[in-house]
Length: 330
Image 1: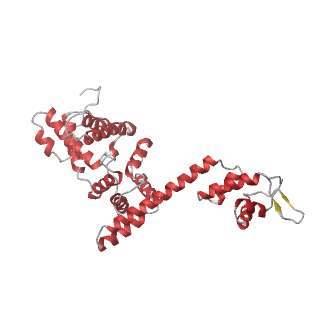
Image 2 (image 1 turned 90 degrees about the vertical axis):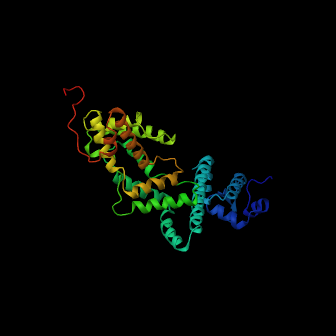
Image 3 (image 1 turned 135 degrees about the vertical axis):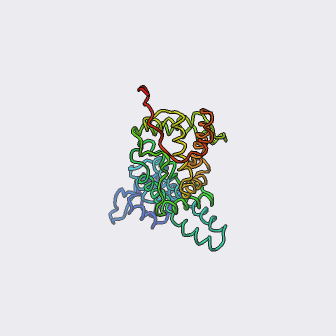
């Protein structure tokens, strides 16, 4: 071509794009006018050909006009546009998979149960909002003295990200945990007895160690018993109470934790539902607590001959005499 500028009609003839569409691109700022003819008609320069090619390719990907305009103006790089569009598509796919899982959960049940499931599954279709409701609940309920790092870990455990590819069972379980937290009187697990601690960071540090060791043992299928997990658990409580790790203290702690080992049935159900939501990747705290309680009882029987009956049955919670602090006279 020897033209220096082209009319819309000439661009249409060469590209096959309708005049109306090219005029829309021009009005939107995607196709800048180089000059006007003596009759006031728009004329476009050589850059119009490259711009039309870019617009055409991006429109083939269903890229919104507003996004194309940002690229055409130099406000946004194509790489950034691709990343943003990819994130949008992934979010749409997640929503579609959740819809598929929801419909699957509604399909595989009787009519009465279907109505119940419909009511609760409707609560979790807006995924970001649904997760915020969980995190808000646990930020309110977990102890304020808990170190931030541990608090964030607990929140992540208690309110996991919704799966990007849920099964009907996991979608239903995710809805069920929202029902539980909205139940009046549903509260946190208070098994750590944090109200009596004096050094929260140290206490939670040792509790974290005990939890990690317990999780490893549970995942390996090990039976409860004396060992590092129980010792870390006892040490955390002994230090918090400024007492020594003695058989007497272990009997007292066993009685104390045995009282709470039943938990609120709703909490047991919550952890069980989390197992389904996460595919068993989260530690079931009620199972871990039961493992530690049994292991603590067995440790008493092992370290103190004749104490097995006490380890199993002492649940009165009577506080033992004050122990001598480390380094002080008995």
